[in-house]
Length: 72
Image: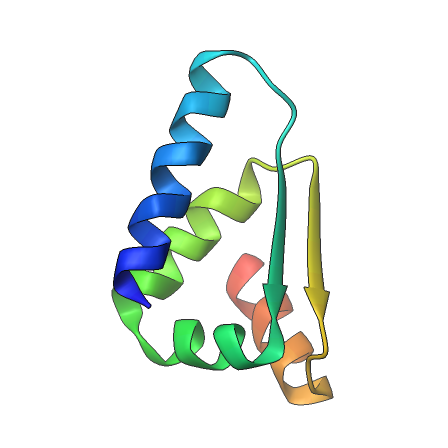
């Protein structure tokens, strides 16, 4: 999971450098792993706070609440 997040960060940084619009898609399974790991969670927040769209699909109500709490 950490390797995938590093790839995501590289793509994200290229989009920022080129002033491109950004969107992020995460599934419930990936979100569960991300929220349990402090580094991944911080990376997730950094990316999503600067995206035009964030799509969390197949997530539980508890996961939705956790994302909202972390973003606030």
